[in-house]
Length: 355
Image (cartoon, rainbow, N blue to C red):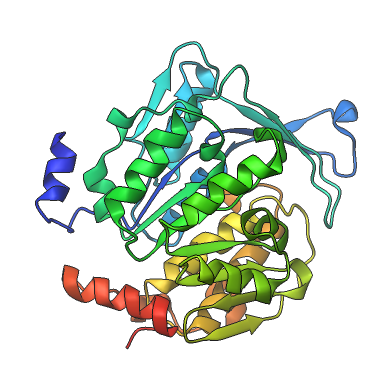
């Protein structure tokens, strides 16, 4: 066990991460000409990318202590990843370099309001799919208030065994153990393979957040209510199903909440879901009622959808509160001692808000 894991295993939560994520990282190259096919684009903006990394940055923007476990190539873009994470206040201690595999890049096309094709360059094998079990600080995984992972990592070994099943077993279905159901067809042999892996994963996690289409891969149904119920039937404590312009639905064992979409002029919808997911996690730690949690998360996603970039577009509490007319989140804090905090978060999952 390394020194960091030993500290966490001894029971110290003082240094625990609020949010610890594992999975994709790369460089996003977004066109600066909208409504233009990729072959005709003349200039691009360069941004840090990858859903788990986006979520860690969003957590840091909300004032949470965040880190990401991932790998880059040993190349200039790998150096950029470290620089960007540090600039954005995300701990990069668990980001390592790999020889022989370049840092992934992703291009997109921007056709607002709802067409944003993605083109992933992750060959011959993305470094973030080659994380080894020995690189996982299980003490940090256990101690984190929220642990998130993208199901893309279930698409191949060694990542499938090393940085998914091992950490999930270590957490033992602790509150806020969250899979990002970011189904990308190009990463899988067929939808059936993805369904089988996600179905296994659902038995080891407690919160599921994604769109109806991605829920169809996970549980075979895209209808928000039926998908939410199917997720709960598999043991999920909090199921959140996004329905785009129709809003978002959430279900716990004892509560159902639904809120309308926040109206916004969409510039780039990529990253809005990551902002939503982290904002949801962020305010679950405050003990807000479930409907209020959804409204905050909805508004955070809307902020990102109104901007070109993903990561540097992630909003702060103040930006979201200003849109909502909401009391500052700083007035609600998680308890200091470990036992009370665990009860606090569990209450939020099971009862739609802690006392």
